[in-house]
Length: 284
Length: 152
Image 1 (tube, chains in turn orange, red):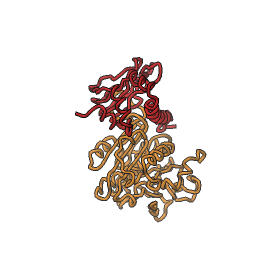
Image 2 (image 1 turned 120 degrees about the horizontal axis):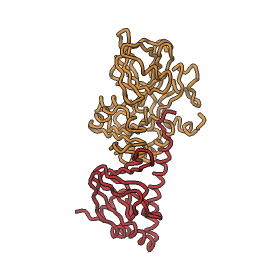
Image 3 (image 1 turned 120 degrees about the vertical axis):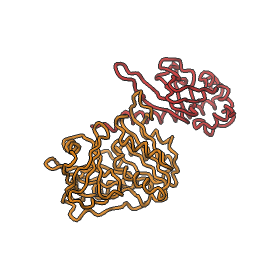
Image 4 (image 1 turned 135 degrees about the vertical axis):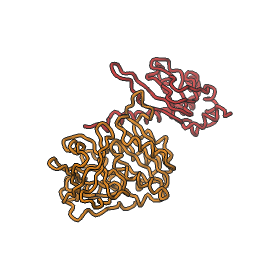
């Protein structure tokens, strides 16, 4: 099992740095991507795919949001946010030029080093594609370092599919297979219909030389890990990203405790084997 | 030209089946092709066959009353289509719509039921394979019903 990569937080992890909104893209009817740049013109914080930031909407509140942009673009940070409540509504309502406070990046990243020279299997559900998008940028931007890329993505309905144009563009890349499915399709949808695990029968996998990264609702990740094991992947080669109510981001406050772990500090990315038994406990 | 027997033996649904059984199946089989946009069968019609999809895509559609039609599942290359031929009253419960040109092997259900009655070893092999598919699809349907990605 490869060690998860931990990046130290900024000098004062509790002090938000001022960033300015450069662009807001509407991905789906309720999901938006924001592109931020540091206000003072210096480089933005570098990050590992899989890490998250705490985003301050001044006067409203602070939210943990995964970084969804390209890790090679140091000057900018991208976040994909689903509008589901007061704070997320305020965040996605920001306009170009508005200020947002950013703390972090925090937490563990996806096992990029362990994936070098191997096939990368990405399984995402819903907005779980956002924390995995930096991995896709990393693999496609450094194609010679990795084997095949297989992306299996499930969304609720055709209108909920994230990054539509990019999915099409990624599918055209060499040594890349992109399969998208929706749980409910109308008659005009010509893609797959069925839960994300139904895509495995169409995926061209080489389990013995693959690393799998999964992000989505916990129950979806349980189904997917079982399917990956059925396909022949070793548990040590499976990684999942967990979500809890992160507050401080550095393991002080305990809001995101998950068994013996703090999601903000020990996660959000975990080797599956490390949390396998916790995933089956409904009360956690 | 590929023989029907070979095509059946190489389809994932019947992978590993002994050639003796493949011979028996071949006696009930025919090659079929459905143009894009055509319906392979419709809800309420007699279910006389099942299909081993060789290439293409099929949408399983339902038409709920007072609501828009929905696609509940799609099937493609290597998949099995249809099990209503196996269980009385042998009636299809949804529409099967070829959303791409689809090539398949059709197996006559009445013919196969007769052979399974006469040869219980064949019957066991067929039921064992169908039950695996049915359980996987039942699990997938339960998982679909959870509506995991909805805002709670």
